[in-house]
Length: 355
Image (cartoon, rainbow, N blue to C red; front, side, top):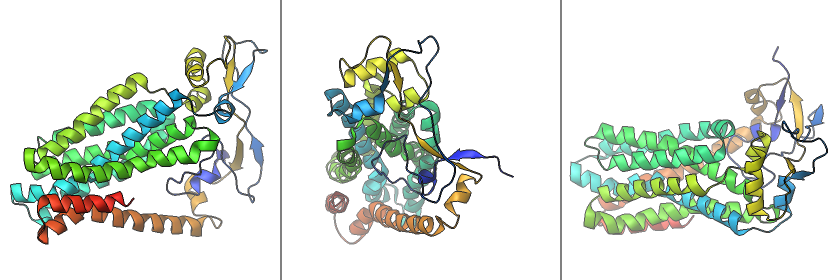
């Protein structure tokens, strides 16, 4: 028999990332669930007096507007997602130039275009657990540096296998960028503006994907296809260093893991000056949980969630299949149809700009 465990049903029901714009560490549970309990607030850390004042960091952020510090965090998340969108579709825009320069056929180009998408799939699967284990900020910074480095290495590729290897590894890193950026934005956004701010962060992907086409139309004729990968590699690496210095860790993560109270206090004071004292103990709101004897995979396929899970998977699969198919091949198809490289890139960018 499977041991009893605490399961968050609202998460396992959804087979893809769906932002409900609710408290990131607080989820609703199904009405049919039994044995619901409420988790206690995070206990006091060592050396802190039992009578010390407590401060719910989630309630504090939800009860205020967006400070300049929070705006800066959201802006960094937006820029990260912009570069993620740029690098995901970058191969499609330079595909026609590669075919001409290396005398490739579409069969030669296909695995190169698909390599990053394969890595993207695997990267997205492990991003969440890694973020919970090592922290959102750390995973985000390492991921951005990693995909920037391997995107830059693509400019040095000398054969098809180098392209495939570099793009696959870059895709692994890119797969975790959007979930981590969205999580950080969600955890720093007040409830009243959470939907708007997280939507703005997600819109960065479209900005980057469309911008890649316009930039490729200008760069490739003047400096060759390598210049697109140089830009797509250097900018994320610089952005990663900037985040390592200026981006704070998630308050939710730090409090949940009982991180340094001094570190938490510094972040809280930057978000809400004057809201803490030297002996303030930081806590999270109580969280409803569900006791279940089922494994998470079993819950996804049980009679309550099977139909919904399969429908969500199917819709999301078909949506991404179409988006990435056209994003990868549209510039090449337009070039083969008689357009020049600049026209093909600009028309393809307009498709991305549609959102």
